[in-house]
Image 1 (cartoon, one colour):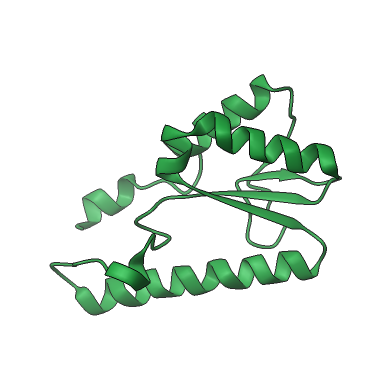
Image 2: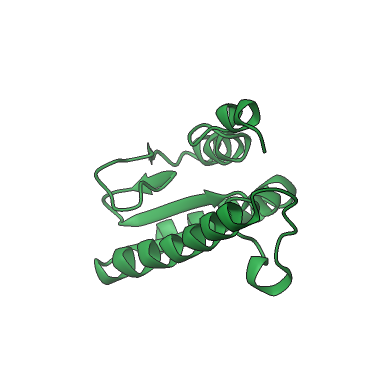
Length: 130
């Protein structure tokens, strides 16, 4: 990946976040987005219910990385360290939030794109149970 490509990558308002956000809003669920006051800056937060939702892209968050590994063509050491650290950070965020009484829900990008209704129903079920 060159620097031009890297500059285009967004950390907020990604395609999968926009899909999820519109679907949650349509179901009448009002959330906070990328709340910096919550550890790990979840993509969506229901603060009173202590529910944190993350929309993870397969590449950056290492979907099946430990199983099949990514085949990087350039700068292999950098990318391997980066993806492995992202996986580790996700685990740390999950553990800290759970320890603090939060429910953490994580969805993969492809899951959001292909099974959006299922993802939203899972969130709604957890939301209503709290």
